[in-house]
Length: 258
Image 1 (cartoon, rainbow, N blue to C red):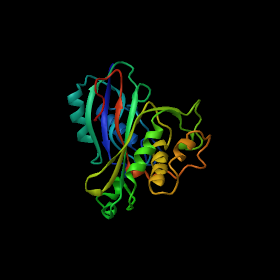
Image 2: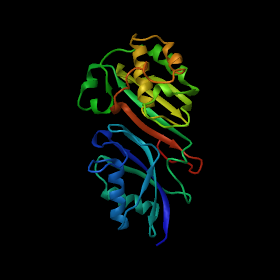
Image 3: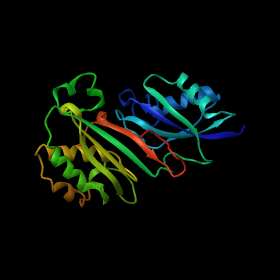
Image 4: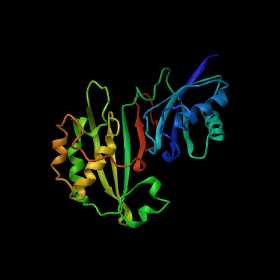
């Protein structure tokens, strides 16, 4: 039976999943999405995600692509998917995609957000699962200078997990900035790039936070960008502060939430 190509934009709370990618006998986002699609299609439907988020990482703009058999309209498919997905996974939008559209390969850029809590209330059960409950002050000026150092095209090998078999570690960072949260709650880091390495954002945040706490000098950022490994990089920030918020595509006018 002929099918149609679609994309969907997902929101999910990462602490309920062992990441995006399918793993046997473990709950993942891909497992839940494909189970919902299979209920509607009567057969397995494989979907591809723009970003393979790790366990604990959240999404406000994860984009997935898939081919649905039968005759579905995007609005009807959206309503049907919302009816069969769990409460911690929300389908924000469904749209028709060009033939052969692939959410990962066709992405032009991705944008992530990282939330740090500096006040005591960061340890509240209503905040702690959704941010890094640091509970310590940070130097906002140092954060801004550290973020400025990573903008542009660099080799980010020192800010990547080991064991990645890649032809290169170059990424073009078009946006990297920290903003203070209201009420002295902490800071939010926003970064957008053409590609990201495994754990790259978390390594960057962990290192910049150490700079802002006076634990390492500011010029360490530029120095680490010349390193061939991550042995001198700060430990990565915890996953629960990280959100995939937007993915851009040349084929789609607006693929995910801004």
